[in-house]
Length: 291
Image (cartoon, rainbow, N blue to C red):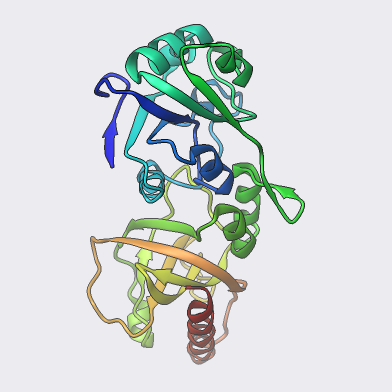
């Protein structure tokens, strides 16, 4: 998939889906549909114009790029959302970005899409322009609940990654570089790959999860390691089943499949290792069913 900006996009007719698309959930997939180009914004517009700043994100730009690319989109256009961009009138946004930069023949948006200075533009603004066709995708739901990035964030914070997956259409993923830890897991017979949560992204509820790490079954523990009482930083510790390779400095993608249990304090290391064995068995069973 080609990555460009409104300034570098080569002139050609396009079918363009426009939106922030945080999480690239099933509602976003319905908006994107058969578009050959996606226009998104970085950073999140609310980081610039929101009264409380940007929400905690479900996906980094890299994750969002991979998910959009998996839909068969030919080009991702990333517009820098800064103070100057936020002050564009709806008509200037349409003239300069949609028409001049992207030469859109068709524009696809969600029914709640807003754009331009003070969010004055909406889908009706686009439909009134005869230079391109506008397609407005309806909001969609699952089991009576509307799918939205904010609803998915709430589910992830609560540890309900299974329901979040139903709305996303893919597992909730934490991704990052494997960093050095205290190496206690190795001493206990469970060497872990440790990731630090990405700043600005939503952090799931502490606890142990069944997971896939770069596609391999794993048990992942998110939290502050209360048994050892020496650190307050949240870390994701991932034990990859039947795997014994050095991953330090490499990027690891961890799909959280199911919250298995809360984070617990154990009185002895024996109790901890016994529970880790149980966790690994449970994680293997979940991964075999859901992976």
